[in-house]
Length: 339
Image (tube, rainbow, N blue to C red):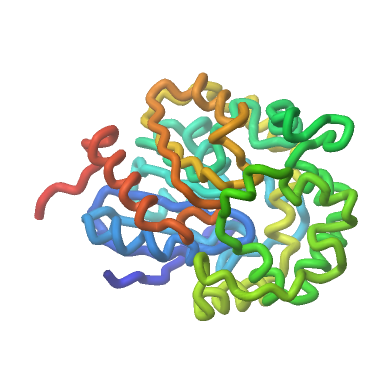
């Protein structure tokens, strides 16, 4: 299945995207997170495109071949959702099934909450819907205090959110000193041991940064997530654009919370949520992180995959299978017609 590179340019933004599948197929839009690319959906696009869906995966704002505006305020959720509405308009589609991962998940949740007429259904990998927004206070209120006693871990596993706010320039410098090492350190597969101890992200400020030093450790490539060639795609893009844009997604907390308050607090459309059993930050299999989603999404399907955070790259077969089954059963009108 051939994957094409395309783009849409408006007065406010340029969005580059990958597309596969028939142009007249039911539209699926895949939104990636930090610090990724449209390339993160490389195992998913050809499979669902081969089933007859029109699959589109944008480079999100600040990434890849899309615009990289200056200033952290440019990376607020309201701006990013506007990019996605421009994209679907460019695709001449009324609605899509939106699929998100990591920071791409708040984007697709917000599309559904603010533009319900543009969303047929929503699927999310590892990051559940939060009616109060994907914001530090909303998340901290849901921290598992048995694992993260408040006296020792006041922000729980979300401590790194506060590090971005308090030490933004340092975070950018540390990631950029050796981008190859950063990519190798970040993209690691999930292990059962990860859920039996506090996340390293819970002590980011105490450790003085993400790596307990000014540069990422020189770890071997984790081939359960990336091949050497795939790693080089990330390294090239992040070296070219830097981390200021990607990191800025974390520092618009007040604006994002206010934007969420203006959106729907209940999503009545079909929702699929895929849990990563070994995700040490988005711990949704245990704890309360997914509970607000369960209250707010009455047509919710949940599945657990034995993997870490980088689900679509670590366990693509399971992701493809669950997406296809959910589309065929809960969003059956969106299934491609036989040709």
